[in-house]
Length: 489
Image (tube, rainbow, N blue to C red; front, side, top):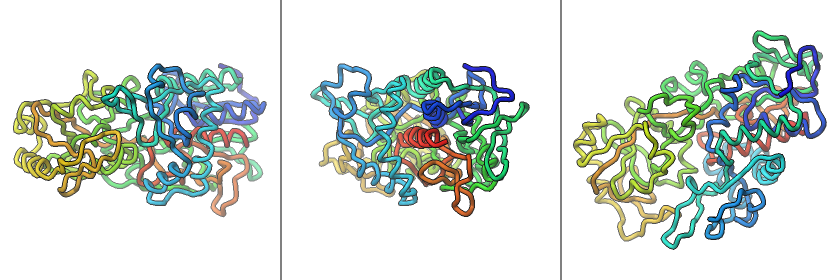
């Protein structure tokens, strides 16, 4: 880590030490630029939201053979099927989950450059693997089938991602400053010329790349833009993403971009101690096996289609649905037959919130759910399942339950004791609104003209996502547009 910076003018300043910021810094340093990366957190709290992720990265590819050159060796590869995931598939998924609100030009860059950018980072020492525990099921013949278009992730999850990025940046000569909170932008002669830092001297550069995240950790901004009640959401990731640099960019004339009224939010453990910004458990407080069971509120009512699609395409919007329930809480229910299928990393840890009982009445008492409502819901659900269709969690099996709301796939009866309930609330990950950019990651002003010297990447870049997002596309967007920003800064 480099320590000298006072009085020096840099070629490029990057604000934010997560996946997008490190990608930008590495791309700029690779071009021979002098690069200063400013990270608000101290060294032990750095990494932004990237640290808290599972490391899942969505890229278009031609199947397992197309990925082997970037994957860590694994003896399971020989008995694994990874279906091809084409650019057309990725593009269609973006349109599907956002309702067509995604910017087509930004989407095309994301879709077309994802795998190449992963290969670029792999060449700089970032390590990747197949995500067996999250994206595949072992089949009876001992083989593995991956599903949902999301197949690779960083070795060591988000913690491994940040560690590998940091090592790569140090090798490339990037100067990293921890505990440096950027609070404003310097503008001279119509061009961004540096960054104001809280309690420290201003730092100057020819170009600035903003990669400081969204405003999900700012309760006031959440309430103002997402709506009343969002102050009750739990912050899954870093508590440091308070929107400072989004506001700083808007203050100098940047145009807002993307959907400021929605966000990425998930089912999150409601009873666990320290269930906000937990750097030890990170992503493991999510509860993402809900497609296998049912989800009820305290009245005992179901309120969403748990099997509408693979969880990769629904999990980032269901936090919002839970937040709207009485008390902003719900319960994922499973029985003894379903319990062994749940993700071990999320449902088998000590200290997580759950209740288990041999009768539904006892389970209702333990959770505070209305027992009559719960019994009525389960009786109707169990009776409505089309049991002629085989259950298969590796495909959208069409095994449905004809209730309202329906369960479109993977409908299995909840009837075998013991019964399990996992309390979930809304965990907010990141906001979808940010600053408007072009495909070169240049920040645009109100008239659509690039602001000289200013770039943005990661969760600050608005326009890719709205209402929902395909799982794993956030890290991909951060590295793709971070690389573009650093290559042009």
